[in-house]
Structure formats: C-alpha cells, structure tokens
View (tube, helix red, strand yellow):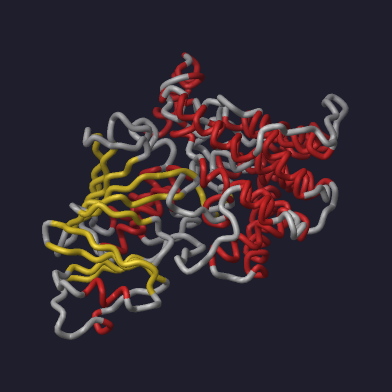
Length: 518
C-alpha cells in the first residue's frame, strides 16, 4: 500500500485541469511548480530528462508532460489557456530549455528528472507520477526524500546537532526528518506553515533555508485519526451507524483534510458545477486543430432525437455526456480528472448524464460524486490510477467502479448496494489494456470510456436488484492491481503495443507530426 493516505478531492476527483492526461500534464505541472518554488522563481536554464526504458520517453510530447512542466515552471494556474504555448513564454523570458533522452536508470516508468539553473545555484529534482496527477518527489540533488506536495515543506541546511530536537518540540509541525547530504545535514519539516530564520535560535548556524508551498488542494496532517482507510474498515465503522456511502465519504474527507463536512460538500459542489459546464460545452461543440477526432458529441446529440438510432434509454444520455467531456479534454478545455484525464468521461459523464436526464438536483449529483470519490480513495490506497502501471483498467476501469457506486447513490440505494456495485463493476474490467493511437488520449480511449459507462450502469442495476458481488471490494482492488502489473509494458500506455502499433495508427501518428511541423 502507499504510505500516502489518499484524499477524495486530491486523488479521486481532481485536479481541475486542461490537457489530455493527468499522469502527464497535471503531474508534470505539479513537479514544475515545486521546482519553481525551490529556485525562488528564478530560472536561466531548464533540462528535462526522460529515461528510454520508461513510459514517458515516447509520450512526453504528445500527452503533455513537457507542456505541464513548462506551465508549472511559469507559475501559471493549471487551467491557464496559454498552457499550449508555455515553452514560448519560457524562452521569451530568456530561459534556455533542453529536453534529452538519457539512460539514468529510472526505477519507475513515470520518472521525471528536472535540472534547474539560475545565476546563483542549480538543483536536480527526481520525481515520479503515481497516477491521476499525484506525484512524489523522491530526490533533490543528493538527498533522498519523500514529498507529495500535501504539506508546506521547509528544508533547512544546518549541522547543528540539537536542531532536530528543537524543531520537534514545535507542536505546530507534523514531522521533522533528517537527511545527510554532501553539504551536511538537511532537515525536512512538514507542516501547515513554513519555518523562517527568526523562528530558530540565534546561535544556530544555518547555511540555507528553502520553502516549498503545497500543490494539492487538500493538505495532510499527522494529527488526524482517519475513521477508516480501506473498505473493510469502512464496513466495520458503519456497522452501528447506518450511514449512507456519501455521508461516510464526508466523514473521511473532513477528517483527512481537517476541514468541516460542509466545506467538503461545497468543494464537491464546485466540481459538479465545473463538470456540468464542461458537458454543456462539449454538447455544443468544440474546436481544436491538434486532435484525431473532430467533435463527436454534437452528432450524437442530433442522432438521439432521430429514428435511426438504437433506443438505449439512460445509456444514451450517459454516452452523450461521456463523449462531451472527452471532446472538451481533446480540445484543451477545462475538465476534471475523475479519477484521471484519460478517463475523465466515465465517472462524471455517467453519473451526471443520468442525473441530468432524470432532472435530479445538484445536491443529488454532489452526493453521487462523493460516493464515487470514497471508492476512488480505496483504489488509490491499494492499487493505482496510472495506466503506465496498470493499463486502462486502472483508469476507465477504476472510473467505472466509482461510477457504479455513484449511480446507486442517485437511485437512493443502500450503503451495501453501493459497495456491491463498485465490486461488480471492477470485476468486469480486469485486463483492459492501454494502447492509445498516435500516443494521443483519444482512440480507443473514447470508446473505452463509453464502454465503461455501460459497465457501471449494468453493475448498478445488478446491485440494486440484489445480485451477489461475491468478492469483497478490497480483494477485488488488490486482484485488479496484480493483473495490471502483470500486463506487458507494451500494453500499459507506452504506445508500443495493441492498436497503437497497427499500420493505420502509425500512419495517423505520422500525419499528426507532419501537421505540427507544417
């Protein structure tokens, strides 16, 4: 399991972003933003290195890793519409940018090596993308450390022997970690605020202090006692409470983020409003040159009102909303990675598409997304949202399991039915590969998002009808993760297998490259 405790609003439903892939754009953006902080916003040179054995080497350009890094280094918001041209703005500011493919022995398929230089110093940051936009900085120069961006982080270079003990006595900070580097001792302090020089004893020799601001919307705190961290614990916790799944989600997230349940509910409402706006924009039609598919949702909407179309009831409403969100993603519009950008249609499109078709209230939509979110927390805790680690089952598959729980919530199903629906849906996704055509998150991604919407609808009805899911949710998640890890790397979002290697896909990729250079 991850040492990091996932958050609904950090990991499962978010971030709000632009771009094709959360593992690429959002993760890279966050790494770039932390790098900018470390360098105090001053840059003269940027070197980005990708390992040839990793997943980013063939996809860093087409899926937006470079664009995300550049946007974070500029200090812009991740929804800034200048994102596509961020490199031009860096270069206009006199910053030299180099991208290299270097065999540096990356231990994770989504490894970023970023060397930043200014007139005063240089640093090398090694970070990994875990999935859904979540990252971990694993080294800065010679220091091996762990940084998720969920704390205010202070790095203090000092050889003072008693400084760690002194800092640990400051109750407002959660952790003080000591690292040994070439320049001596470095103390890493995690908290809700930074440490400044005037907070330290005057007789302490301090060589340098660096501060890095949180990059996640919900912070962490070691002082919180989570009510549960896996679904088995949640079931036990709820045995004498009889709470709905969405209510349990509120309790988890409010404790996890040290905020009120009302704040959690309203933050999810904001996300629902963004999603509804994006669905409306997608149905209206999107324009963008650098894409494989033209806008698909308007044509589907038109067909829905005709007679030459299969009448599949609410499934058609879900397909429309799923397609609309995927269209918006492919046109660099604002979406919510729920749980990832590549699967941004499955969960919200299914739940909100059905809710809108049934004229349900905004509060009902929020409750459905909260229920989906807590299922996502368990997946993030015990498995992954990264297609580079688990194939498409980790993305659209996870989204489908989350959506199934959300749909049961919309239909006022029980807590037990929500968990059952998630288990059934996830069981149906094992072995789903990730093989994007031309390294774009469009084909067969759109079809898989739509297919997983149907899976969620079926699983929700099965659970509501009393079907036995048989295998407990936690066991399903663990088994799903093992299956994903067993997939060949060629079938895990590398563009080196499946449909991506067909002659037609190769021709599409060449045509897109020619279009970019023309």
